Image 1 (cartoon, helix red, strand yellow):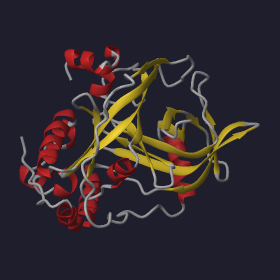
Image 2 (cartoon, rainbow, N blue to C red):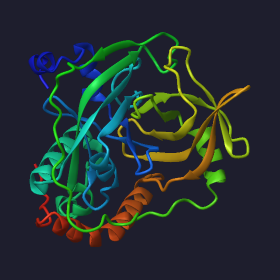
Image 3 (tube, rainbow, N blue to C red):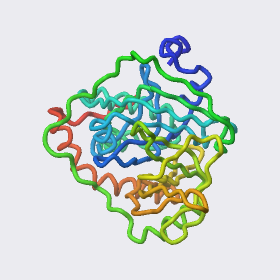
Image 4 (cartoon, rainbow, N blue to C red):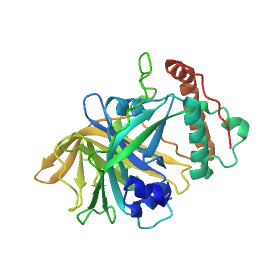
Length: 331
């Protein structure tokens, strides 16, 4: 987005660099029951929107937004963004799902992702990349910012600056929902989540908490998470953070390398408690995660294993939308 387009959209211009160069942001949407679910996702600047995507063969992130367009994006991950000190930016907005033209979606994702994350495809044979339709075939989620708050850093020690959209802003609608039933989850939740969680809290650099604000919108902020104590995680939250009401909550613990060739993500669902000792997350379950860890051979093997599980879903999901499986057109 050019400076002129930023001006027309009304966004604070000093935040454009954050939006453009972040490798990941936290994308928070709501379950059928209204609980927040937050996962790291790569953001891209759209036409007066900030866009994220999900694979056509695993559309849950999009379908949650289609049911309930209240979403949030948290820009609080400076790794690989080229800046040692970047502000933390919380965007709460309105989502519109785009899957009426899967070929257009896929062409855009291939082009933008390879430009933004070149290390992820460096050295890969083009013939192999063309076979990764299970990953490159995409649904886009366009997020129109309605409220933006930002702080100097993850400490949230100061009160945030704030921007709001015009009250009369016309909000877009999602493309029509596909026919048939949404596919079931393709990954199983981890067994022995306590051991996985205890390790993640110890070794991964970033933790972000999402709750619901008074309007029922997800509100996601960086926190400092302590060691797991039974089924609870103690949390430290900066004094400049907005009030975080007790209730349904999600804690995402994650990290990746500078070039985004490895990533590890863990999402914990539970309840935020306000105790005499401070805020704590009572963990009820852990979600299945998309992580790529290990050396180059292990990462490639893990990615191809995911592909074998997802490939059979690709044709079915395209057919639900009355379309053919998109081709992978490399730039």
